[in-house]
Amino acid sequence: DTAVSQTPKYLVTQMGNDKSIKCEQNLGHDTMYWYKQDSKKFLKIMFSYNNKELIINETVPNRFSPKSPDKAHLNLHINSLELGDSAVYFCASSQVNQMQYFGPGTRLTVT
Amino acid sequence: GQQVMQIPQYQHVQEGEDFTTYCNSSTTLSNIQWYKQRPGGHPVFLIQLVKSGEVKKQKRLTFQFGEAKKNSSLHITATQTTDVGTYFCAGRLGTASKLTFGTGTRLQVTL
Image 1 (cartoon, helix red, strand yellow):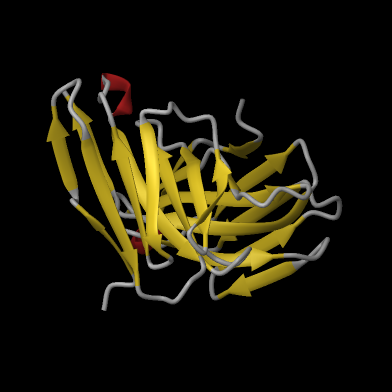
Image 2 (spheres, chains in turn blue, red):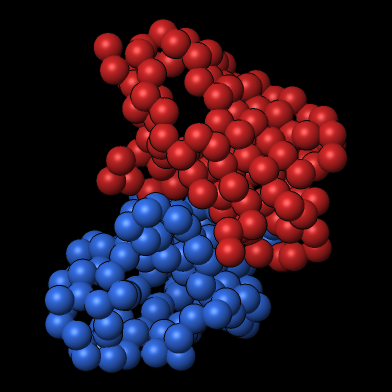
């Protein structure tokens, strides 16, 4: 039973395309997150939702739009992909201010 | 810029040697969490420290939270090849709700 799952695991696409990454958690957590991990392994938070409400929105280009249809799902849509968007994107979930459970990651490569 | 720094960035030890990574923040942290990320994997929660001066142990791992709540350390005694990975501290700066991850320390262990 996977606690936090993401699809797809790998995504290779060309500049200018639009793509989505999906995330689902079966832990009953109220809060979900999107993180970006760059080639230097720095982990930076992008967005956080609590009970479908956006609570953290870091300085992220507005080409990135998260959507939470319910508290178990948090998707990330990216418009007009750029080379600099290449990274590993992790979804995570937690109860408020508790330990975070990470998904397996989606490796996005923009060519 | 990065507000939670870790040193060293990288350490290579022989199996059986000890290892320590240090985490430093310019701002008081309300709590500190530690995560381990195996190569190709996702961050996995290890522990959370909340109180000033707190020390916790997990088998060969010892975690400390500084008296001023601005620094923390993770010490591994007698490293094993299974300890290979990147270790991240993560803390909440002041009253912030988001978790800020440290820059990470990559540990390589060879026989």
